[in-house]
Length: 158
Image (tube, rainbow, N blue to C red; front, top):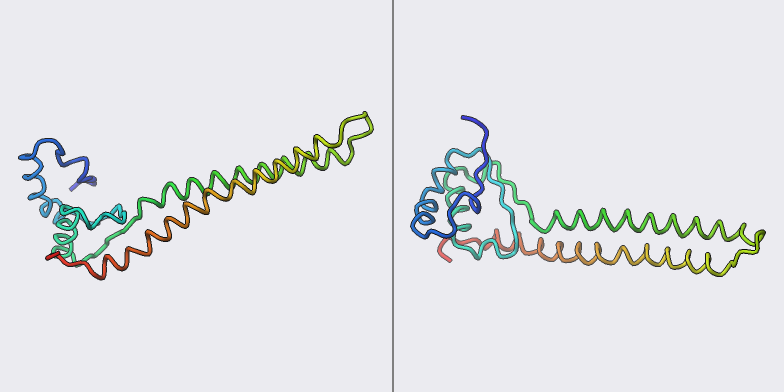
């Protein structure tokens, strides 16, 4: 056996209904040959019948051994937080640099008010850069709160 990946969304024909039905019926065969199941989870995951079927087949075949549940909202959250933090840090550094340069500034007749306003604006932009990742992280936390409830109440009959 060679290492390979089966992505059901990409490997199952979504247009041709006959092919799609045959592929869904063969999901258990793919799962039986799989060493690991990675679930890209969203709050609507268990509302889709084929996802429920896939988890039920995996439960039957592997007893949930080596199952990874990865919230799909996590990647954009990490990116947004990283981007915003670096942006905030750069704005703070820029603001502090402008402020320090304004302290030594009036020897050439420079206007002291412009650098001070720029420094304040840069620091405020840095603080505002924290709002987006905070909002996105809060959304992620709310959706992750649903996962244990969905797993506890999981019923193949429903």
